[in-house]
Image (cartoon, rainbow, N blue to C red; front, side):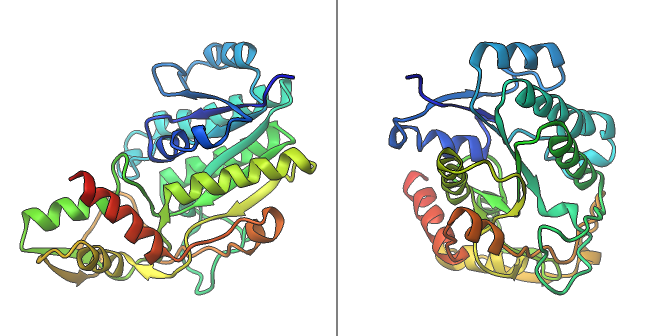
Length: 292
């Protein structure tokens, strides 16, 4: 009997790289990892051909246009990648009876809440990146009955470009850095997210697919400044980290002030376990320092 095929977009990104680290522990699945060279998100025919060739049982769509500030000027390409392509992928999932797992973002919310966002709370993105990811969610759900949307936040890893690696570099180069202290959220170690997605897939093998929107991050509610200070302390670096306001660090794209998400649903439905953000960060920094 043929093994279930798990297709993964964004193979060189943080999540795709972490999923590749799990392949050897999952002999009951065949994996197909693709990046923009293998899988052109702006080419509907190429997407269709991919599905015909590989017949994926599960499709983890992690590839995205993630340059939040550039998206304010590159609106068309951001929408084409994050929304239009997701709709095409979802339609192909429907044709081939594939379960789509679409990775979305906390930036679908406007940040005006003072309580963790529930998956059913009304989205209201402040920037174009958030708007395109929300449009991707909607198209994913509309075009394929078996779609699971997982919103995540503040993703970091030993792979790719992210806040943790940027902070480590800047703290080695400078004696002082400024970090915003009035935007609050929850970090997500991509290695933990990758394991959570596999837990979701393992659940779906045994149970009927549970469509809908779910939230996932590590446990904790912190500011970017608190995140940076903890990175500095765990890496034993001498740099001074100073808190500043969002107004003191203007960016082209407006950021939500608060995007902590309620994760009870993904825990109760799929049995996903959550780690404390400091525990996961310590593991990642330890790996980064070993390879430095």
